[in-house]
Length: 134
Image (cartoon, rainbow, N blue to C red; front, side, top):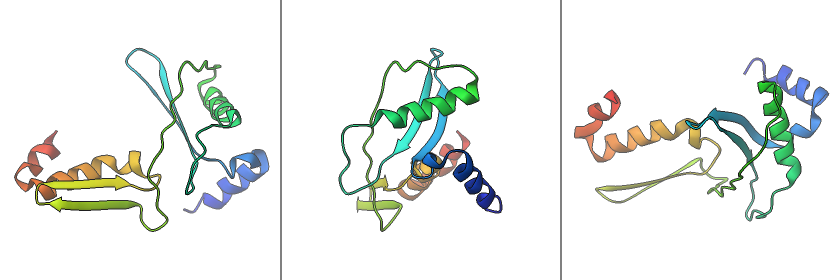
């Protein structure tokens, strides 16, 4: 992207510790008013089940800056995801009625609805237009 070099330079200048942090600073308000915050990623053949508290503190700090208020963490969730250096998406069709899809990179939230629509179109083409209509 044209602005990537400028963003990278700003990060190195202001927060160099973020360079090695694989994170998406995202948050969404839930119906009960609480916020769901996320998320950092750790990649490797094996992943340590313990989280370094620094990562959470850093993410919460950045989100607090955006929101303009301190946040209190009430629950934590640690997801473990499939990962592959060879592909971002594994697709298997063990039979004509079954499609198994696993995202093996950080594109799951971004691509999930498109992957679902494509899967439905492939397995049940007669339902494709109904799914697209909502």
